[in-house]
Figure 1 (tube, rainbow, N blue to C red):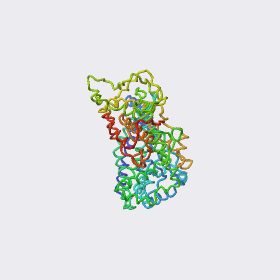
Figure 2: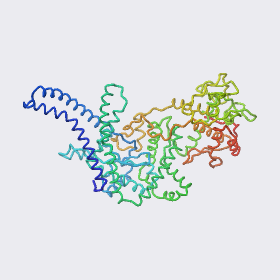
Figure 3: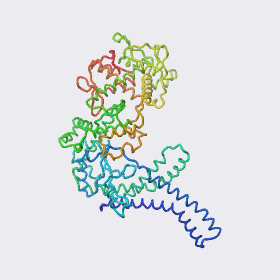
Figure 4: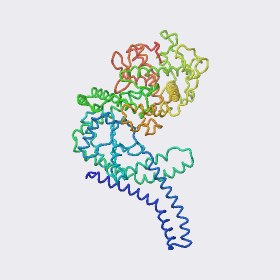
Length: 638
């Protein structure tokens, strides 16, 4: 360990953590030590008498119980599997240039090189200790070193941590920028190799893993009681170490930053700008582009390549980013990989699992999609599915097809049907007025002028939207709004009713089509195979609990108002494609978009909100007429 001030602070804090561990061990051994003294006094004839005998009879079983409890707690702490970040492992034969660059960087910093490299679908980089037996056996050369250590074979051989790199960095950054950004991270292997710091970290990670084990749900009351006691002790020790462990990590980070100042310091300042830019582009790509595809059971297989396209588009639009486009002529860091496409696919699949909760491997309902096929296979299909759902709900509500001289006689789905239904008739008012009017109907049920309607959403979902006769049963009542009531305040009663029904229908579909929380080990192994390491490497997807997927949800569930706006947008886009020759498109920064005559159309959101909140279709109809979209014409659904 170097002479940096941060390293000295980290070692001092590590010693404090180890002293806490020693004190806990001393407390556990204290009853046994007193019992041994009492027994030795009885054998020597010095501690005799009724009082000493009673103390021996009492303390001896207590000491045994305390020792057994301490041994059990120590066993749980030692065997509990520490948390490990889900990553895509990169074997050295899959990226020899990347490994060579990292080793050269470690030599310049005079620190041990990381033991392996892995990628994470996030804009961050860190060192991760994976020396726990549950994370896989150490490399073969480590066994040889231990075997040849002779009398020191019983000591723990230090293993360098794994370097985890954010996959967007490899595609957006240049080689020099990546090296500058990784310098402070790689410099952290120096303090990590110190025995005291390594031991303190192992102890804290073991306590954290033990708390996780004891917090898992158990059905056996005996095991619940035992693990409750173990968890109480582990939490007590963890609280005692928390402050010192945090200061330890701050000291290690300060020492690494100080050591890395001698390597590419000027370039690192420039590269940090690229870190923020990559984060903004990655977040926009996931939320605007990838999320709609994930919701449809498709996962873009080149997310990292999409970051480059998104940031290039940003540099074209934003004059502040003009200088960033010139960097594209330099060598990208992804050239350090032998098969960047395979690595990108594995990272894209892992991103879908972490941020959306998809299966571990491709399947009939979870297939990859290329960027060239995204408009047709994702955008067009998404709009038509949403439009079909909208008309199914209207069928269930008993809404009649559009009437008029230009309306189709077959009852086919049209945009006019939706617009006519959401148009607020005179005197109906907003949702707030309707709910507070003592003379009005307290429910949100649409008062249709025709008594006929559909009684079941499920029954109508199996029939086409148009052409089927309406049953003579009354429409089913709308679902209760509950949490969406506040969100739907200020809308018309018809909009609120339709939004609530759409939310219920979508919830039914998601519940019936919910995928299994975790895939089989075979599928997980297949998904990781393109970038997997040696055959002896454990499958990283099997080392973390995926029952709580998604681990990092991108967005909260859409509200009923947002669902209605999305479905109206989809219906309008379908009408534009079928009657005005518009085409689906992909905007790298905004996601699905409608192209008319090869150009992106204006934003529809204000006009749709006017229809939802005020029941006024005039702005929207004017926009439709301007683009030549005919709402009375039938629309093709899925």
